Length: 439
Picture 1 (tube, rainbow, N blue to C red):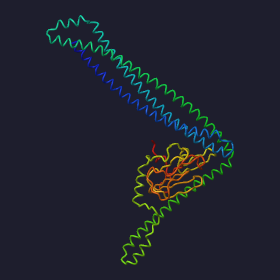
Picture 2 (spheres, helix red, strand yellow):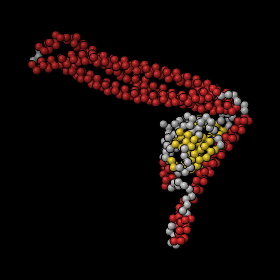
Picture 3 (cartoon, rainbow, N blue to C red):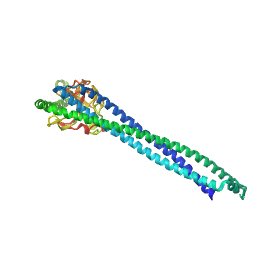
Picture 4 (cartoon, rainbow, N blue to C red):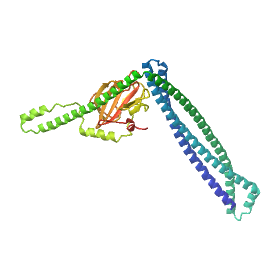
């Protein structure tokens, strides 16, 4: 009976060894995934760091005159947005590391329990061997009632010795593996401390920048008359943009109606029985109202595609840092409220700007306060790309999603190194953030 029990115990140990191997593999895969996520987040942090340094250099060069002070205010505002994004990425990285620590601690606990179980089993085998010894084993063989029984007992006794040796080796291996995982945990804790230090440092920098910003606001408030004049100018520019956008949409619809009417009359003319009159009427309506006319069916397809892409559209530039949000915002410079028709996205100078969905360019115009603007039609949806330092498309051009329409602003552009991005449904402005991908 003792031999049978020992044999069952050995089988259980084998199962434990197999399970340990499977759990170890799962842990490594999970940990590697977390490490990959950390690498990606760190890459985003490095990009934000580069942009932060650019604005820090500009802030250091700023002077105390009003124009330079206002430029400094804008740069600090963008810097704060970038630092906020970096803090968010750092906190995300720290969450990844915390998840890595939790996973590693669970793995240590699992391996420790497996090791304790192996040691307990090994102790039982040693206790059995000590109590029974070689004499008892010889006794078992001598007292065998048959040759078969003696062979069976010999087999199990040999297996017991082999398992004892194997378990001792397994315990050594498990201890080494456990030490490796503990070292992983130490490394994770070290990384965590580094990121926490960086978070604390960034929060300190952010606090300093916010202090500078408050000082700038106080200085700018002292120039209230100039600022109110600037506010009026911004409102006029915004109203001018809105009116132009509305007028352009109306003109586009007028042109489409005229072209559709021409096509209908041309079709009627081709059915006139009298040859001479038919030729005259066909010639009269044969000249297109507009070039690159897009059919109603194609526009409907553009519209459907745009509508189902809410929350999934790719960003028009390789940046997701917004310095000025959509809608009514309170201006900290003078406590008044302004209405932004879109969002201002902070970019690298002259970054590629891509159309977010299939459509057709229906206007390109320079507008005061917004620089060069490209307007694109997607059925009853419209997008606009402003503050462009370069334009790569032409009016009436058909665009597929991702086509480069131009390049974003530079330091010398009206809105600096940003892109103005607008989304409309007919003549109603929509919040672009609700349409752009969150990933």
